[in-house]
Length: 299
Image 1 (cartoon, rainbow, N blue to C red):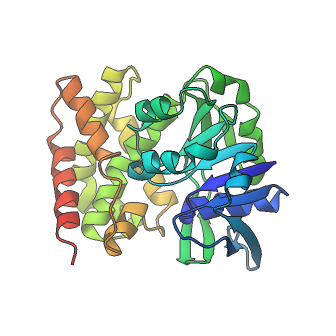
Image 2 (tube, helix red, strand yellow):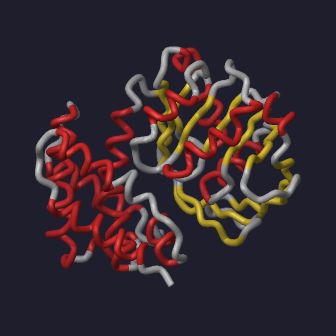
């Protein structure tokens, strides 16, 4: 298949290389003006590196694509869609993959005719440098439709599964999105505030804070319609912490490198939903404020 991948950060580069290894023709659409780029791609626990050269920023390649996969950060989604809109065929399926939630309504307005799908992934990657990425952790990817046209494209789940397993179709993509958001609310802000690896949060010093964050998230998820006991969510979060103990979260990396974070699409979205259901969320509000303070005081 001909696939245009919009955004070539850690996750975008991970999927670009994985899909290219399956024989798909990959075209990158990115902010850098180059018309070609090289990617050194290293698989999970693999000593060898695959090197790919991709064409970049070619409108004719974009217009002939079979799939568009958008992997920018949540706050960049609208701008990314507007940048490709002049060459995007209305029949081309578009997959949006980012941490957090809250972009769906705007994307539906910007792409009223395209088959529109969202994906949430627990695959992990580390951007070594501007031309190199390493797969650092495996986890499930879920794909699902958010409009009627998108439901005709369930087969794309197998395309992604072949590249980076496991990937499955979900009839209600909002459910795995909420599950991922819940864990991100607990792990990402704390690792960014304390500048630590995920595994450090398993220490007893973090138990009370993690529990309060999970309690608030569980209450909101239950109000939304996804009943989730606090203890179940806390245990799921601790399982992820232990499974990804050596990893740095994307938000930790953003703060460490003084980049804008996705806090508004993660904790900020949770707080908005808490307000909507008239639920208190002081623990999540506190970490949201701390991350915003860090961002505002970048050197």
